Length: 148
Image (cartoon, rainbow, N blue to C red; front, side):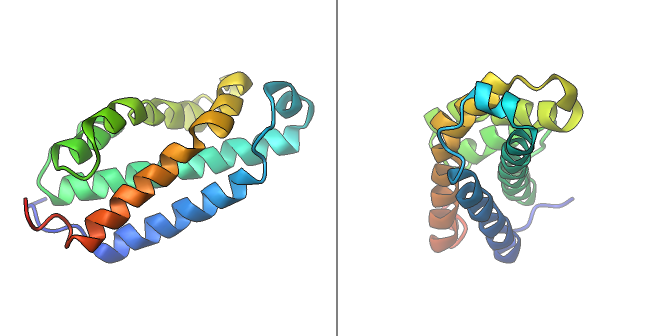
């Protein structure tokens, strides 16, 4: 793929889906690992919500990175590329890049999901998705990084 420009419509579509998934998950904040284990429907809802958040975040990162001409060997590299492009701060990228591995566990290793990790992400890291969305909104508002 030759480099071009990120598509604002693609970005907006993923931002909407990300914000909706976060809003749905916020209703379940406070759920402990024990509560998730005792309520399979709740656990499923939280896991799938986090999966949607992670996938939309990764799709955003991948779209921006690839359309900016970056070679992305894996999902974590896509998040790193957002920092290299100035879309997100480097320290945020370093803290957030682990979401790529978590997404892979949810998708491929769903029989081995640690509910204490799910609960911790729900209760302590949900704001990371909002922060990413806010950075992406600024990226859009600034003309998709035209000043690069």
